[in-house]
Image (cartoon, rainbow, N blue to C red; front, side, top):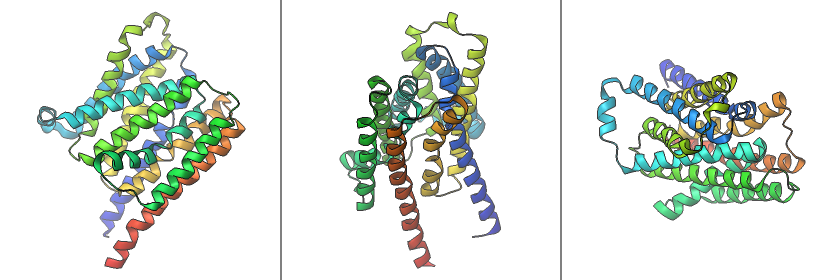
Length: 296
């Protein structure tokens, strides 16, 4: 690896880590904004969609129109799933605790492995199956021991978020031509289209509006841009490890700054899920490095 390659890899690691940091701010934004859920989703969708499309235009430049003209159904399907995951994710944070929502969301990589096996016949290794089992045990412990904490609707939305993210991941693994930025922008605009009928803009204060704009631009669009740029410089396994930091960081910020203390069951169940998640990713990284060392 040349010095330039090392520099590019360090930049990639920094970009993806920063993207995870920005994505982890979702809980803080949702707990700080007083407007109703549908209004938040509507306005954030408009801001996020426009911001992501501006980033897409800046990245692709003259090729942007050609890329948009060549979009096919996998990208449209990815946009629909992205929009559904955004709505479910924001709803889960609003109606359940932030920690509960993120613990359930952490199972998405394992659900992706299951979907990949069912729909594109991609077999998962024994390590993935074991990690999936451990993660499911953690979620079940959290739900069983929550004592009614958080609403059933919020937890159901968190499950739907994990399922839609898994579906999105399966499509992007099978169809490598999916355009990520247009898909995410389309998903954001779809959020606004679905919720426009339930919006009450009169209740939005200037403070709420400013926070929603920051929510859309900083947390979503800038996080996505950093992720796209960073993943071009590092391996998929390294990117997965860094983006997984979103799971513990999101409830950590709300715990520190909003006094949103997770229940005892959520702390234990979440720890079990995190062990499964990071153990699985680290095992994948070791597995990808071994052939490279042998080849050297």
